[in-house]
Amino acid sequence: MLQSSIEQRDISLRLRGMGSFHIGGKVVELTDGEPRQVQLTRTGRPATIDPNGSYVVGQMYVQYFLPDPAVQKFPLLFWHGGGLTGACWETTPDGRPGFRDIFLRAGWDVYVSDAVERGRAGFAPIPDVWEPPISQTIETVFERFRFGKYLPNGKTFCAQDYAFHKIAFPMNSIEQFAAQMVPRWTQTDDLIIEAYLEELRKVGPGVIIAHSQGCVFALEAAARHPELVSALVLLEPAAISHVATLATEWPVPTLIVLGDLIEKNARWIRMREDIRNFAGNFPSVEIMSLPERGIYGNSHMLMMDTNSADVAAVIQTWLEGLPV
Image 1: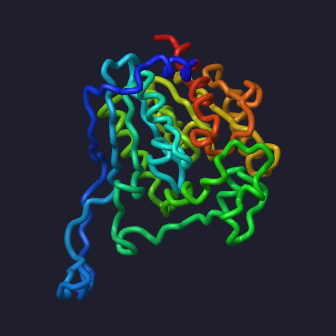
Image 2: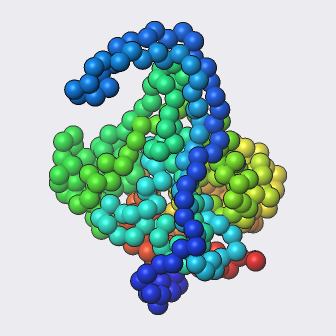
Image 3: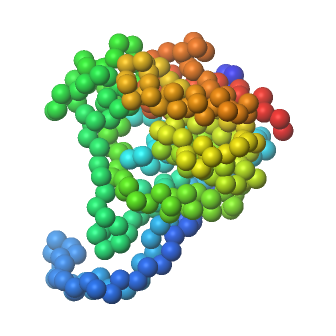
């Protein structure tokens, strides 16, 4: 199991390389803006800012860590969900190691991305290039991510009182989790998938571990370019990519991981049915229900739950069973 193999390693970690890069994107020209006076610093003089000119938009940020030695054959790419960034893979809200470090210590080259318009990827001028984004409240994700049935407004300080019984998410750290939530755009999917494909062309073929909305892009990438994808691990897909539903064969080994408490949320019951319908068409797609593996209490944020090391272990075991 992955957890025990980590415990046998020295606590230090040797890297043969680390760094970051931006990938994807395009240059757009704005010509109809009005110059305006802007106070750039508290004590400085106002400056005239002309919004007209060239901007790079649609780029993605990727940070990578390369262990020494590298044990695994393929790189591991982490793709986050909607309203989140690559931070969700780095450290859990209550300070435990995230999936990035768990798999890095298991010998994987890891690449963690902030998708187009998220985090360090930056975003385009609003509303000149993109329409304004949407944001999610803590109360919204409390129900949608299956932390609990309902959280009254302004009750984040006692969210554990409204959480599902034996929920594995660290409820005392829900505000720390909410601090990493970011706005998301609804019309950037084409830019996002193109940037992800560019990442695969640069560092792949590779294994993709994706979460929620990121699973939609991972499925599309595998359907369009299976030669770039060695395997997929999909943590609770938010939907099945339309491109994937049209596939007549599925040559990419795929593991779909589902958490607990799905029966308590009608939306997730419907999504699980869509996942089962997709998986039922292809022998190369396997669904892993964590409760059926004896791992209980998982929310939608599988990589952050208090048993996340156990979740990582069953994923690693599955990956080790793939043909080389």
